[in-house]
Length: 406
Ligand code: SF4
Image 1: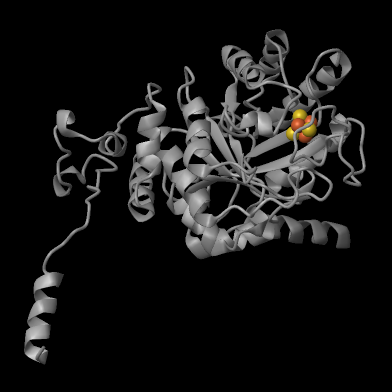
Image 2 (image 1 turned 90 degrees about the horizontal axis):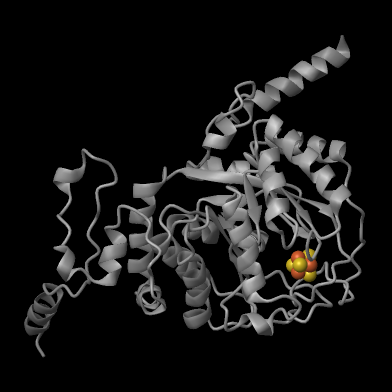
């Protein structure tokens, strides 16, 4: 073929565009005139319905979620990003700090967990922390920009733990008094216990369902999927926000089990306020040690699907973030994630430190999310984070040094 013919052929091919189109959607009134109108509702695919959604729906079928989950990843992530911008401030990422207030000795057999007494993991067990030590830790988290303080105790449930609950109620009140959101994860909870925590001012209760209903028996045998859902119902009925998500990398099949996980939560009477996506941290001594590492594409696909299916939910990159390079984390933010855990530890595993996250936020123009709950307390200054982040802390440090010198 002569060069001329070859060039013509190339031109002809390149003039044909085969892209499937994700229409941009106005994020706020005002940019509407520049955006193509959505297709008529009757001709919308499930994917388009999700992209153009203006509210949350909980009538999803597994097949519909699967159709979204199967989309080409670039298209899926772009659509999720578009929806994210409609429902959330794009640069705002919530900073949460998680403290283990009682470590190890748990009777459950969650096959990924270092805190189960069934596995030899060399973990030091501890009793319930004192209220004062928890409030001190929350103050440090607050000073470093965290807006939510989560407290985790390795228990199966709260039965017979009257004294423990009393102390936790005080911890919750103390954390709320600092102008932070308070979250606890204490295992299964009954309705009365949920009401007590609500009265103390608890913002959210974390209870992950971990994986799909089908895969769940391969992960845990000592409590059922329905028992977990019952706790979520008790929490919701008490008026506490539900925080519930999963762990990726438990030997599941992403195409079915990630879809199943999202489907369970997206069809609850209300979507969870927050959906933590954990990446398995393999712990020597637990049955899940040695599982294949979670692939980035599976993580991004899961986050993007959750964003499209539960548009109002805060999606939290939880355990395992420490193993993700910054570029991978950014892909997750672009696909709709908008919360992280930050601080010294994440229960028993390492966590990205505040300084590291502060630098990442500055590089990428992210800002710490402010929520209604944390605005309720007027005495607290808004955490400063971002371009001039932590200036207030540096000033406070200097002031402290001066006070010591004086
Ligand atoms: S995940 Fe929670 S319930 Fe399961 S073993 Fe660990 S501490 Fe116990």
